Picture 1: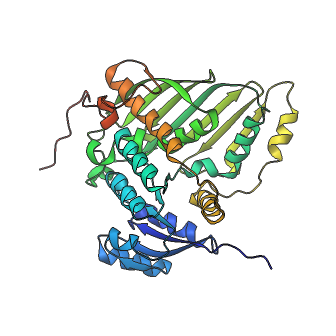
Picture 2 (picture 1 turned 120 degrees about the horizontal axis):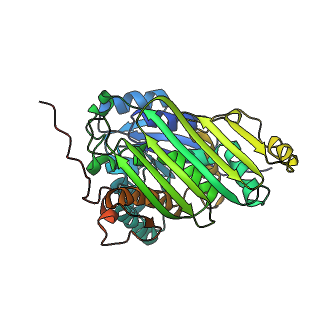
Picture 3 (picture 1 turned 90 degrees about the vertical axis):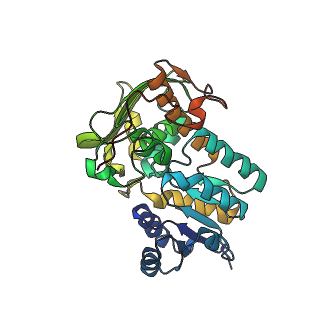
Length: 369
């Protein structure tokens, strides 16, 4: 008789909006993951959340991390708490899965990495767009060399958030959110770009605060050169009434385009072979036909499999750092007015300890009376 490893016992810290997406995905992975405990400083919210998803509620992260047999903790709190909670989890011997961004700065992320090496327990990051079936299929075609060399790409996160959105105290502030749409919104889309095209080499960027009542930018745009020689544009906006998320990649033998808003399905991708390479359309069509969205479930399934079977869980800190460094380089280039090469932002650089680098060219927002 075949025996299966037990389900990963999971805790969630923070029971706000994104935590519901986590809990729903866990519930869909019966036998692979089991939500057993949740924590929130708001006792009523924690209790209601726990009742909805069949878990126990506590009001303290330390109490949650002490639960026996906990195999994973999901950190779904505001960005400023991500690094301290991840470090606390690792020191308690519990792997942490952190919502984006993993940390507010490269310095914080490097401290997480130091503790990870010391504790021998990983911190992982939620970048669910990497795991949609179509993205997995495309990555396989790229790795197999079917599409030829990547030449040019466009990555756009054009969203709309009104002034009221920023009334939440931690939004739009460098010290507690880390940045604007470059850190908190477009990061999913350009993480997918980086996961497909590989290491970036240099960024030249601009950033602006156009209309929103924030300390951070509400728009950024970057020109990117990759180690492979590919070039790309990356635009992040929160002032775009016609919302869209778009990724287009032009290879030697085909163009691949994705259009969606907050999560894609297989049907949101378009594949166009170059003349003389029409057979590639058949290879693309032979990929997944499921219309399931690129939500948390697929990443959680891959993570559960790795934890239960002793594999390497995704997305490791080295992957998350490359994406966070891209955000830091975007800000550094925008505020310094110069190109920033990969690996340039190191300890001692102001942009290593803060995405603003202390060089934001506009004044802080005024508080309402």
